[in-house]
Length: 158
Image (cartoon, rainbow, N blue to C red):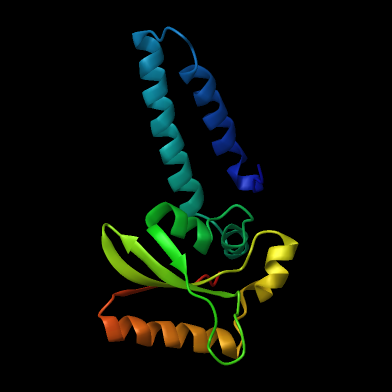
């Protein structure tokens, strides 16, 4: 797991909590300890993240494990069908477009994708869209307008 230095106390407390939760026969004291540890973790997170300096905030925004567009797409939407190309030059992988369902409602999804690995980042141009990416997004938005489909955009700019 990729931890930032100021996150260590939180991770240590969460590891202790996992050990306590895995005990086979919890007693009332154990249940109280679990509840108190959860409250302490919540308090500690709030205190740490409310008091970050500017550079630590940048580190959090650039954290390797923070969710990206594809993560939100998989967690929030159903039946995603990617739509490729701008009908002129090609397909810009930095812009992800497609049809999906959100709570049963069809939506047009447009998102910026940066990639996680070096290969993915190179293919996605590190999230920097080219003109064909903007044309692709615009054509899919016009398609959504034509069919009366709501548009959901996710922009990843730390």
